[in-house]
Image 1 (cartoon, rainbow, N blue to C red):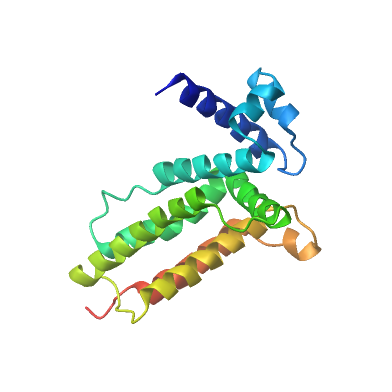
Image 2 (cartoon, rainbow, N blue to C red):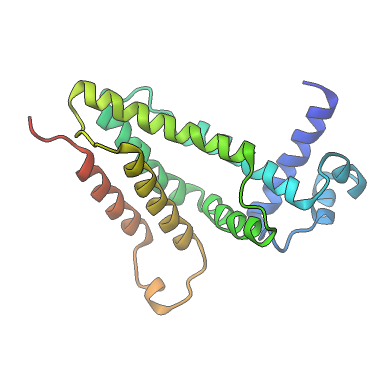
Length: 203
């Protein structure tokens, strides 16, 4: 790792902490510079705009989430791996709800900036799809999951549904109905519906 890479990693690490504690729209480059103990010019040397820094933070968080919550190597069957995959959303929501809050703000920020795609961040999302698809293929071989004519559509429909639910529930309560629900139970219910559709119980 070069000195430049080390400095970039250090700035991103400090930025992650600040962005998870406060909203993206509220945080300024000055705030990041203060947290990192460097001048604003140093930040701009490596990140030309706030948008560049926010994207770097999102990409790094993506890697952290994948490494921390999506290791299913000990699972015995394809269905067990899929179960762990979908239950990871609840695990993240329970232990690090601020991750979903950040993703929610990140989407809104990128749209407001007129930037709807980031190549590195988008590429990182493929890690999750490949992991889920691999588990599904294992499940087909060991007979633990049902066959889908279009598993890709199933993957996107289910992960988008879970992600959007977790994003909504991570935000502040707005109406009285938000306050009267068990948020974890709501995520668990959706997860169980997905797994019910996946599991092959023919045996």
